[in-house]
Image 1 (cartoon, rainbow, N blue to C red):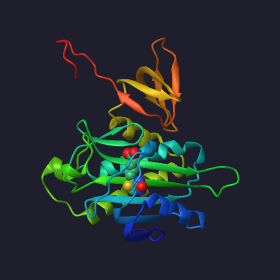
Image 2: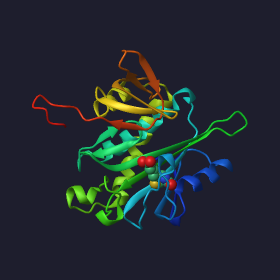
Image 3: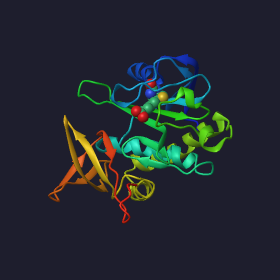
Length: 250
Ligand code: BTN
């Protein structure tokens, strides 16, 4: 592990993101990672619950103080890519923009990025990772899965966690140097959202279109029905079903 990395390992916590947030407010340096065996109030995006049973998943939050402040939404995809790369020899995954990792059509991991960016605030970002590792069906929402459910094998969480950190540190270095060409290519290559019909929520409205590109800062470029291009940052997204030549939805 690199010298500038600090890991705080807790048995139980409400949410590693909340714990990391408090530490960051007190001036904790990057990169500090808060890791927990279980969370009693794990959170996902849009105030959803993130089920976090004891020793069944990886629940961790990174305290970051990124230099490349104009491109913070891209960090969400960089964290997702780190998880995908860490698991590549175990299970093929795809990134569903902006923060989900999918095994087939089931969610296996999610990233919760919370930035403290106001002018009067100390600037930091908390990047929370939830990976369902040994989680059983009964402990998961309907459209979710775990590494165990997909492979029927038990993997040690420590080994996978170390790999995620290793991948992340390399990608984060490029992010801070604004050397993004290779990173963006790799994200696009592994993103299931691109070139698909989708509908995204902008404020209270759903807009349909084709996910036609990814901007340098991680925003999705949506081409609407009038061929106008719109930049979408961290929105809720639904992949729409396409019809194949035989008329079946797929
Ligand atoms: C999502 O898919 O909506 C994001 C899920 C993020 C869950 C992780 S688990 C560790 C960290 N602490 C939390 O409370 N949430 C994130």
